[in-house]
Image 1 (tube, chains in turn red, yellow):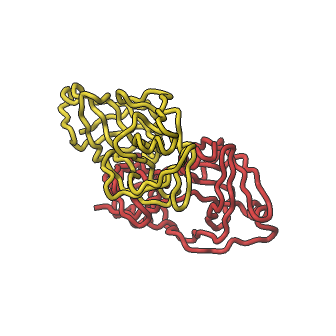
Image 2 (cartoon, one colour; image 1 turned 135 degrees about the vertical axis):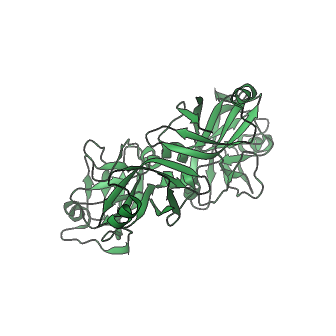
Image 3 (tube, rainbow over the protein chains, first blue to last red; image 1 turned 120 degrees about the horizontal axis):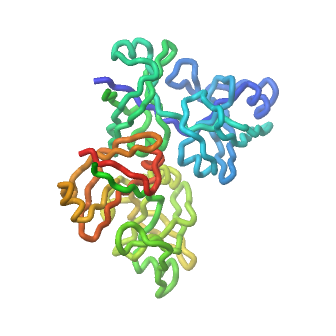
Length: 189
Length: 189
């Protein structure tokens, strides 16, 4: 059985170094609250507010380290509350997406793009993928056996020797299945 | 192909006649904003606020007519915001569920039970069920082909000559699949 731990991602933001300076002050460096499942990635102690036409969320967690471009990942439910209509996209693919206002303790940034609903995916270390015969970008069917069992289709495989085995879904998907971070999913095919 | 229209239910409340009087005043009668898919059921013009330990929602739609017992149906996402932990249940099965404060224009009611996350289900008219060989309470597998395709397992069939064909899911499930009311689902088996 091909079993994978599940990580349910709440809304969060990745920031460019330039935006960190505007929001937190010149030369500011993010500090790590805890390590994430993917090597080198961490949840920062720092948070920001995000504001759309219809609503605002305070205390949105920043994930570090800094990236080339700022990106905000929200659930569809969050998007309705904010009053925006982001597409379902893979991380990093932000051309043509809507923006939002980001508010930090020292300043604000009006993003003109960068908000996505993250496409569900599984990170595989190269060795896991080889063992199970899975290719990078392959679409998988995956069963979550929570309180409300669901089979997810079109789950994107992402394979790298920099990755650790983990399935990433958002809070809508986690709540629809009744699963939480650390529960197990089964790859069907 | 066994095709069924989908209805995505936002948070809502059913009220007993006694609670309608406390919330809206003696002798008050709900008024219909629009008919729902099930015969005799309607969304009322009237709304109430609901309040839990951690949060509050204003303008929660009342569905009429009055029922024997008050019942509140929320998504798991809503439940986290409210700070309560309702079980997934079929409508009407509210023993042992948490309550909430309900606030109307003329009064308040502190429910000691009645909050559920509604178990996904399909209403079948007796003639649809007979045509497709489906029994009352049968558990079905159903595919939703939205932006993020999902197969729902353990979908409860509810068969009556009082029902119209409709699949009911909540906003977490609708958003996880990327479907909206009026989209079509396919019963697989």
